[in-house]
Image (cartoon, rainbow, N blue to C red; front, side, top):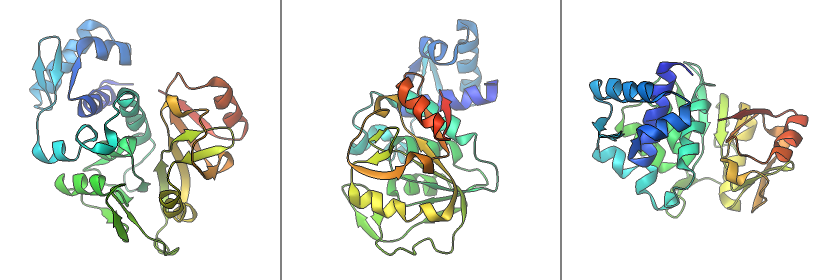
Amino acid sequence: MNEAQRHKAILSLLNARGSITVQMIIDNFGVSPATARRDIAKLDEQKKLIKIRNGAERINNKAQDDWSPLSTELFSDNQSLDEKALIAVEAATLVEQGDSVVINCGSTAFLLGHELAGQDIQIVTNYYPLARYLIEQGHNDLVITGGQYNKEKSIFLNTVSEVLSNYSVQWMFTSGKGLTAEGLYKNDMITAVSEQQMLKHISKLVAVVDSSKINQKAGFLFCNATEIDYLITGKNADQNTIKALEQQGVEIILV
């Protein structure tokens, strides 16, 4: 990871947590204390964060605060946010300028949208907090899939199977409640069925799942493991499941 990539990852951690310490940068990125402090100083000079004693704070922006994982009821459990931020940074490196991507709901999805905002990338989503954030950030190429708004899930649901019939996209990034050698599970059947409609219009499916959900079976089977092209997860993921997924052709990226 070069300096520019590390700076993006630091900002993602900061976006997720609100504040970070020098020690957190050292632990997450394997850099020296001097490098960690230098990173904070440079980002402070660029007015991308606020330097404080032994760390940094996020620059408050009302639009961002309103629609960040930390201020949404869906994301009240922040236990894995550090790992999710790193997953989002890694996921963003797969996407090239000019690509079209589908990003579904969830905290990792929101953080991925944060990474891609403002770039020459078409983002297709049914997730209202992400769509709102991208609009606030002035993202130029945003497609919001229509349907009935589900307040509890903060998404638009559409039962029409051809909702994306005219679209062909390079990437789809999705998470879930569990991932086993059998496949990816989602907690809500209605949400899962809505997202399944998008699978036929994509080239590559990327599962962005934090390590606590690996080898967990919960809810509705969204897709079989053989349909997943990439899995991005944490280094603490269950190794037996990782090996079983690799044997089925899934490319594994650990952060």
